[in-house]
Amino acid sequence: MSSIVDRAINLFIDEGYCCAEAVWLAFAESDGISEDAKAFGNKLSFAFCGGTGAQDLCGAVAGGVLVLGRWFGRIPGEPRNQDLPKYTKALLESFREQFGHTACCHLKPDAELPVVKQTCKQYVIFVVAKVEELLDKGIGEEDCG
Image (cartoon, rainbow, N blue to C red; front, side):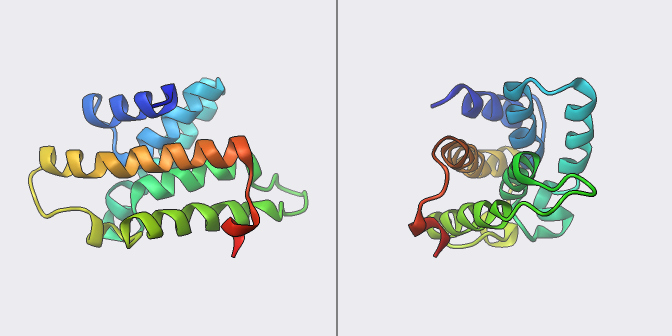
């Protein structure tokens, strides 16, 4: 496993961050962004904990989308980066292929927090590894369908 994966697991399992926060913070720390940017991103990622608080989009996936947005998102006043939808689609499709759903209500067990954390750990690992792959290798034609 990569150091970013290891850090995300530590944040999620040992330090009490939710899945979205763990994904965001692991990349933010690795990228060495400013403390203010890291904190602001964490505030945004917190909104996606527990499937946006409504058991909808998996928080780990949402955290991965935030990381991709950091790299490919639009700066106000500039044109849209046409790559972002391709990257987010590749992440969502690969996650859905691996786990069958992207909705938290289908992924997370109805159990006590320690059981939930152990189950959701695999989603954090998958998302971080996939985002690393996308950032390192780009998108192949097969990823864009």
